[in-house]
Image (cartoon, rainbow, N blue to C red; front, side):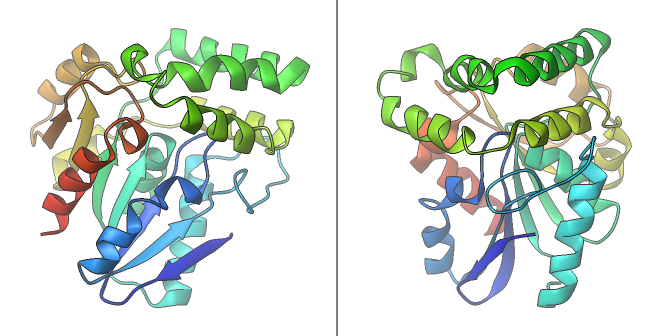
Length: 247
C-alpha cells in the first residue's frame, strides 16, 4: 500500500473515497503540519499507486493495510479523517486499533437493498465503459450550485479516476456494497462527523434518522451550501471543522 508521511508531532491519517486518491488532501495537510502534526496520506487499495488483484476489495481488507502501515510507522492512537469510502475503512480500522475517527461526508450504516442494486448497476456500467460512470458520478458529488466554480477540480478528479483499472473500480464498489452496519461502534466510541447540507450521497434526512437510533449520538459539524466534496467546495470550512477535532 502506497502512502506518504510528512511533518512531526501527533499523527493524523487521511483516507480518501472511491475514485479518489491521497492527492485529494494536498491542500489540507499543510495546515495540519503547520499546527504541529504528522500527516499520513494513504492510497487505499484500487486507488492511486496501490493496486489490487481480486474480485472484492472489502473495507476490512483496506483497513488491514492501514493497520499494517500504522504498525510499520509506529503510529499510536492517530486522528483519522475518512472521506466517504475512507470513512467506511476508518470504521473497520477502529475494530483493529485505537483511533480518533472523524467521518467526512461518510456514514456508518450498511447499504439498503436499493443501494446494493445501484452498486450492482455500477459494476455493470464499469464492465462496459468505466468512463460512463466517471463522467456521470463525479460531477454529481458536488452541489449543483458549486459545479461551475469547481469545474477544474471536477475535471482533474475525472482525469485521475480514469487511470484506475476497471476491475479495481468494480472490486472496491463490491466492497462498499457488502460492508456491515457499524452503528454499535458509534455507541461504544466518540466518533465525529462532518456533513454537507446539500450532500446527495449522505442525505441529511437519512443521517438524522440513523443518528437518532444511536445511544451515543455523534458530534456532527454541518457545512452549509456544500455537497459531498467540501474539500473542494469549501476547503477553508472543512479545515476549520477538522482543526476543531484535533484542538
